[in-house]
Image (tube, rainbow, N blue to C red; front, side):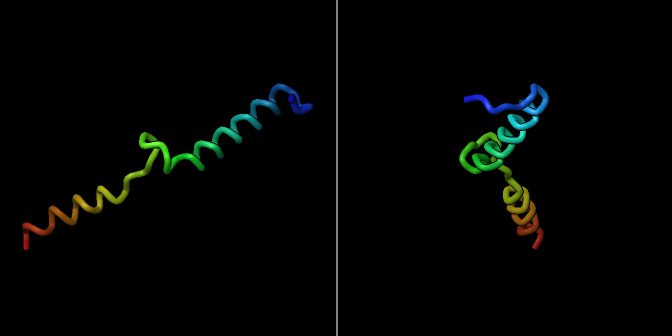
Length: 51
């Protein structure tokens, strides 16, 4: 099943589809998961001993 596209259109579509798939599967892949909450937890833990 090949779409009637040129080579450059095929590469653009494949890259866009791959980006969408990776963005949708990011929470399920540990390596691509964003971890902003750990930084916040570390700063909060550092502030507690100062009190």
